[in-house]
Image (cartoon, rainbow, N blue to C red; front, side, top):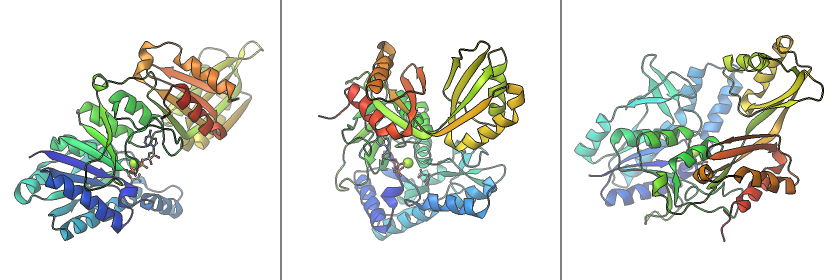
Length: 412
Ligand code: ADP
Ligand code: ASP
Ligand code: MG
């Protein structure tokens, strides 16, 4: 019998009525002859509340206990969905990460799945025709025996990893939109749903802020060739509806130079003024940040009119903003800057498309279009299939819409 993994995100399981609706989607697929493993998220808002409680409890909380707390949201939904399925006459049982087990690395709050034991779930299919309802987002670090979570949005990754472990024919990611769009449809009404998107493009979209899929889930889907389909749980459960298939580049017929626009508000900008323009200075700045596990993203260096000194601007994630400033001030003597300016009201807007490999001047057109709208670009990065600009946060929507229209992505 063919195997299917179905993942339902927070809004899809937000209350008992929505969980009943999820059960209808499962019943449909079961009737069409699949063995089914379901991966669920916590009910909408539940994880935020759990995180908030940890933060209230202690400023510097034990990350192992944080994981014990935040993993509980998924436990509730898995149990509830199993109850609802049983009530509808469908054999089902819930599985927590440690029971399967889903083995992870020891990185609390950002664990990586290393192995999933498929035997018990396959036995449940064969012996009892049982739907396995699995908690997303969590696993077990075997050596320490502790629960580990995979990072916010990590249930997508659980689902794709389960699909790979079970050798599933497909992994359906059910969410509150009916697929992957050319940009966030909640920001741009003219965004278009894509029937297909290449793995590489989806990976960039997700890394650059499109939270419709967790980055690691796309990496896993790509590495293990998991056929991943994004679709809506709000569509009619009685029929199989449209969505977006994440697939190989070769399988896409219609091609655009730019496939999508993503944006990330999780950015902060730091500028060091009058840094000595001499060998070793970049290392003096970036080494201490690297040692503190702070990722630096965009970097620009501007020679000042005065010889021998330069200004240096770079970005870090908003979560690292304060820590980065503290470290730089600690190192001020060694680095030798005169002042440090920080800004957190910035956003990174990116355009993504495999077509950029074969087309020149794609980014240049964006710079011109943004300038015409009076949007100042503070930093730029480019790579083979994407470019990003850092701008003032107040212009986010205008910039995203401008680029979306510029590259012909607006729906008619
Ligand atoms: P879930 O709880 O089901 O995991 P998420 O909130 O994590 O759902 O992801 C779905 C949301 O992603 C959508 O509601 C949408 O606002 C947002 N999103 C951002 N970029 C895109 C995009 N390019 N296509 C579709 N949705 C997107
Ligand atoms: N419940 C977790 C979160 O809110 C994981 C997920 O939904 O994917 O981040
Ligand atoms: Mg999500």
